[in-house]
Image (tube, rainbow, N blue to C red):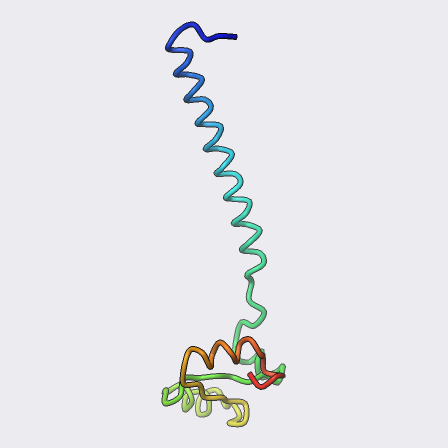
Length: 100
């Protein structure tokens, strides 16, 4: 039906925007919840890496190497030094079993 008064037109427009905002909010919340579930880490600490026989990388020249060896008793053969972000990316892509 044709809307007769300006007040009814305003109410319908506001109602349409409220419904649109609620729909978008629900969609965004649902998408966020599903994405967060998929982003859970598979490794949460260094001990898990060592138990699985994985390598541990560190920035070349960093204090982290000495800390890993002295305080956490990480074997030197499990440590790998990296010099650039590209080397980090390659190592993470390859994984420990493939030289990463």
